[in-house]
Image (cartoon, rainbow, N blue to C red; front, side):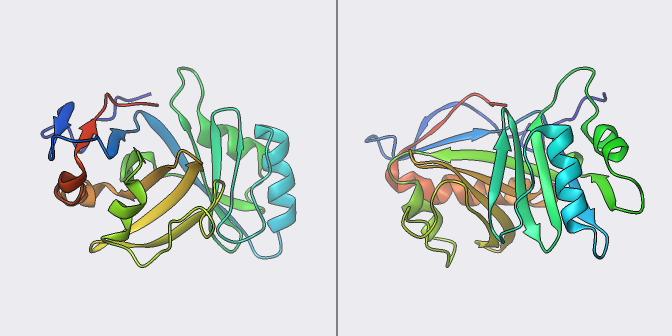
Length: 202
């Protein structure tokens, strides 16, 4: 599998930044990841969900804005009969090819989009306040509990948010072309809380 150079390579530096208190926010890039989009063809949604469940041990959610998981694999609803399948890169495992074998070409389109995304794990006591600075989504646990995902703007960038756990922790996905712009937004917006840039995580 080809090495994937992070879009953040020129700027990613670990340490504590911003206000001396805290850190209120912890930022870690998630890499290397494999990200595959599965788009069921018309009328094939249930068959696709069943086939993916057999291949990965978890069925993609039928309910909008819901994420499911199996071990280290996450399946995020991104539209009617469309999901992102996300997992840490593993030597010798080609997720896209595995899914193509599980799904016939008449059932779904399977596309490797891993090179086109930058992903962060955001956590800490002030992470919801950080996200609220740039998004109209309510990130409080009562409205956005673990296992939910949603798409919307953060700042000026189209983003996908996934509530990972009740810590709270969120995974944030943006197009790779917005990676550096989003990095600037996140670090500027987090400065008032004090933030820590952690080592990249899978």
